[in-house]
Image (cartoon, rainbow, N blue to C red; front, side, top):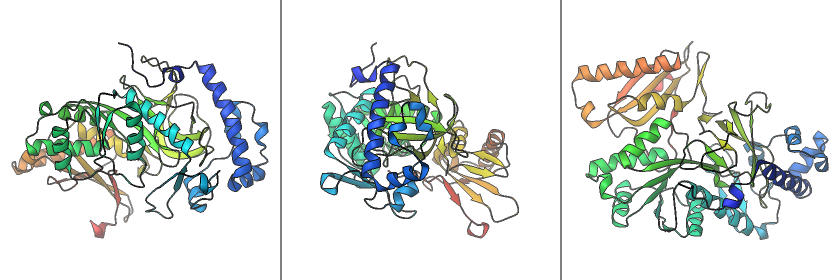
Length: 437
């Protein structure tokens, strides 16, 4: 069956045409930021960079990075390349770790954003006949509105329910005959549990597809979501600083997320050295925007860990794919010299019966040696079972984690609903002193 595409002409461009378009747009973007953004003009002057000297895409590696800290230092409007009178929308991060990062959009930026989220939605199986329930939080967060306008561009019916109140979410799904759900994967699993509590089976719903993003998740979590909700689940990726959702998304082949290369140039670099890595090697994703008017960014370090896949996709799309994000450079946990990401723990837990999808990693660095304790939420039936069965489950979880991670681990089984999810991003890692545990 032929794959459905929103913009087949662009999404199937030959590689040489993609690269030529990227070079032309990159050269234009570099000239704009040099003349309109004082931060970039100073940065380029200090590095001796003349925008006109960039004559090939390989020259991009010679340009300095932009970081989230750069955006915070220029809060709120210092990175904008257009006057405020041309900005028609503002979004921002929560600012929980300092000044928030502020993102502006021109009218043209919003048109591009709708186009790109439309591509992701169609790639994930959404069409104009669908009823889309958006359970991301509306507001300053970019996820909800980005997909909202993309869905409307396709011609789908949108239910802007926002996050929270899972019982209401499920009632609306049933009554309004929702066919597509958009939220974080952890919240989708949380709602699957609520469906079971309410006695609502997937057969009673019209739901058939789910497009999930905003946090790393594993293949095991995808399988569990699909089984418990009776849907096809795809991953999508975006970040507020670059645009929001729509940077990349999986097609129904589920073999990597297609990057919108006509709007972004992706690189993968060594997180420590910043050196560009060869195709196929895992590292930190770096993105350069080449069509953004309000907030163009050059070599923005996303902090997300992935790799790029240039092999042809069976769907026919030619844009490079990125592997599902496995974690963040700032989420990497190092215990006694061993590096790992929360998603690795998730993969182990998903393969063990008797546990729920909700867990937290508690890192204690107060002693001579760092210690890791994994809190795992147990299902209702298992928690009410005999003590010896809980002890056996605890040993099973501990042994599986120690084999997968290569370090000793303590496991604490906690009762149902202790760690249950919310509509926002799941908090997986807590660093605490032993006296606080």
